[in-house]
Length: 205
Image (tube, rainbow, N blue to C red; front, side, top):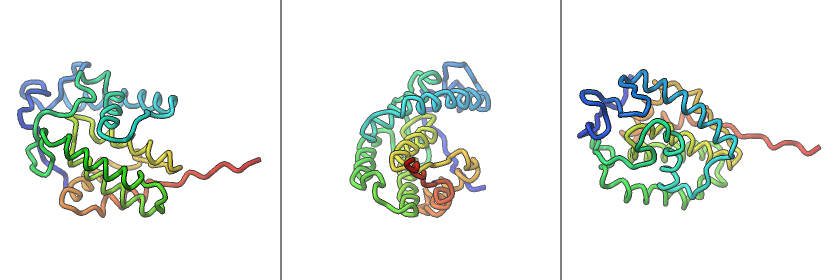
């Protein structure tokens, strides 16, 4: 399976010594244990998001950070903070360039009116592009993917679309990420066309 292979340079700022596991409040020192902690916490947080109707904001970098902070505040002390270390794969944005690059990415998304007025197939194509762009930014040391999922769920929900990320296997997502970094968005588009559905309006009684 094609997948991205990278590490964080100077990972000691985030990780337990000799590991690639981010320091976390639960004290989990292996990735499987951390994934279990994250999975349980995300289930709680997603239920909270549904209950409160989402997070208000302008859908730019600060709002994206707010989603991360909300999701991971009980897992990482640095939840919501942009990473300060570089990634070994040069296709990812360097840490000191995230703010400027993010401003351009989120401005483009704003100028496209967050997919408003697009046909469903076009939504799948544009969200594929922005998924790759946000992955390229990779603003957080852990949790960019999970944050991206709830961010786009909220955007699409306001357009009466449902997006079922839970239906996507890790293998399929990683293959799409790897292809996306090589400017091939077809795998992302295939995923999104399969998981985005229109929410029907309730019939008036």
